[in-house]
Image 1 (cartoon, rainbow, N blue to C red):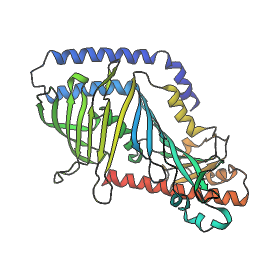
Image 2: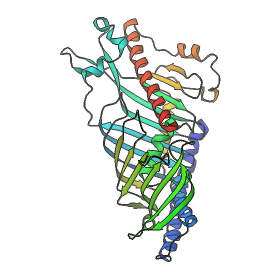
Image 3: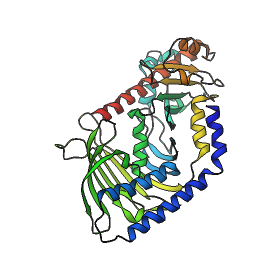
Image 4: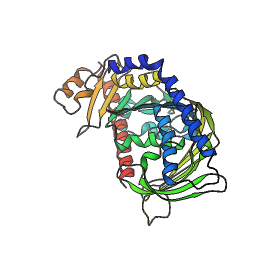
Length: 399
C-alpha cells in the first residue's frame, strides 16, 4: 500500500502532460479523419475503433464533477442534491458523493431499528444517516466507505443530530463484483463513455440526418453474464460521444432495461463530455423504476491523485472515527471493528479468518454498557441495510 501511494507523487509531474498530449493527438487524428469522410457510410469496425480510441483516452486519466439535482444513496440516506466527483487513471477510479440540502430524517426513521425500540425508555432512539460515501475501484479490490451522521429524538420528540460523531462503514469487494461496478458504469455511461468494452458485435448501422451514427449490437450490460442487445447513437463531431444508449435484456421484452441520454458538450484537452445526462433503469417485477439526472460542471484531463490517495487511505487508515470493515470477498462476510486511530492491515490476507475476530475484539473502543449497547444496535441495523442493498444489486445484475 505504502509504495503504491508514493507512486502518485513520482508520476504526478509527468503523467498529466502525457495524457494531455495523447488526448490532443487522438482528437486531431480521429476528428480530422471523420471530416474527410463526411457523407460516406462508415463501417462498423471504424465506428467501434474510434469509440474505443476515445474510451482509451478517458481511461488513461480524467476528472469530472457535477451534481444530481435530486437523489439518495438508499434506505438509510436522505433525499437531496448530490454533488459528485469522479477521477480515473490506469486501473484505478475514485468517486466521492455528498448529499447537500437534505431534509432531516423523520421520527419513523429514527425509531426504526427494532432493537432500539425495545429499549426506548432506557436508551432512547438513534439511527445512522449516510450523507457522504467514497468509492474506490482498483485492480486488486474495490471498497465503499459510508460516513454516518447519528440522529436521536430530542426532548420535544423530534429528530435531532447527535453531538457524538457517527461511525464509518467500509465494505470491501472483489474488483469485478457487480454490486459495486454498477455505480461506476452508471456515471461513466452517463458521461457518454466506456461502452466499447460491453459491445461484442455490431449487427446494424446507419447514418442519421443530423450527422450522428446509430447502430445495434450484441453485448453485455450491468453484469458480466447479462447478455443482451444495445441500441446506441454516437456523435462523431463530439469525439464519438454517446448521445443515446438502450440496453435490452431479452429479445421478447420491448422495454429496455437501461436508457441513457446526453445533451450538450464540454471540452478540455480532447476530452468531451455532455453538459447534462439522464439515466433510467427498469429491472422488471419486484424492482422500482429509477430515474437519475446528471449536470456535468467540470472536466479535466488530469487525474486527481489526491482524491485517489484519500479513497485508498479511507480503507487503510489511520481511521478518523470508529470504523466497521465488512469484507464481502469472504464467505461468509467478515466484520472487523476498529477504534479511531487504528489501521487496517489484513487486506492481503482476506482468505483467512483465523485471528480476525480476536483482533477485532482488541480494536473495540472502551465504552459504557449503555452507550456500547446502543451504538452496536444502530451499527447492526445499518449493516443489515447495507447487506440487503448489496443483495438487491446482485439480483439486478443476475435477473
